[in-house]
Image 1 (tube, rainbow, N blue to C red):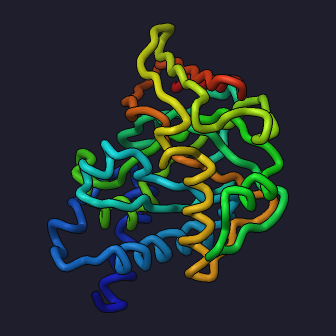
Image 2: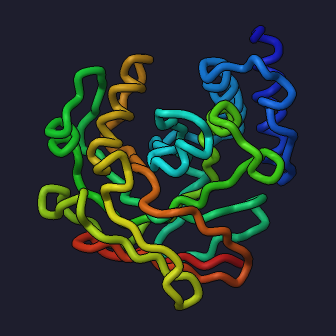
Amino acid sequence: MDQQTILALGDELYNALCRGKTVAPLTARHPGITIEDAYLIQQRMLARRIEQGARVVGKKIGVTSQVVMDMLGVHQPDFGYLLNTMIYNEGEAVPMAGLIQPKAEGEIAFVLKHDLLGPGISNADVLRATECVMPCFEIVDSRIDDWKIKIQDTVADNASCGVFVLGDQAVDPRHVDLSTCGMVLEKNGEIAATGAGAAALGSPVNAVAWLANTMGRLGIPLKAGEVILSGSLAAMLPVKAGDNLRVTIGGIGGCSVRFI
């Protein structure tokens, strides 16, 4: 894909974000688009947001579950960037006006105290570099019509990242089994989904190691102080104004969010 097309598609996705509108799938209009092309488009979209004053505060891993991999026809996760304009705290209201077609995921967030720069990062390295883990919601959102996405579409669209919500509890990751910890996600007071840490590539620690090694090959570190979202522990849940959600993760704590 030529540079002019990459820039144009990155601008198109940025404008869709700003206007709260969706666009036709990139893969339908450019059948030859590669994942490498998609990451270049993602960089353009990100650059436009940074030009407007946003700053990177972390990274996210997506497509960590086998179900989603099968849906997209891929056998690897993807990654995107978290910006300061995306952060919400425990119990805060998230306005639907800033979202297009949001879905909620319960996840475990890692907060780093040391840089991680792959390749060669092990699970032990991840645990050593982690200040704490926290329960969180990622509110994914797609600028692509009706979520009709292939892996290239979601990568280009910053891994379909919308906003994220951090809980108000934090624990040492060495004090909890991150593979077997159970997750319960409630929507409007009723259990809507359950899962476990193993849903994220067998362990959220595996997911963060994959991210550090994959981004490290591109010369991009996971930095001290950054928040790293390690992947959904259950299926995505559509949300609308008036919904109240709570996720509880065994040994870590809970996180609540409401939509207005």
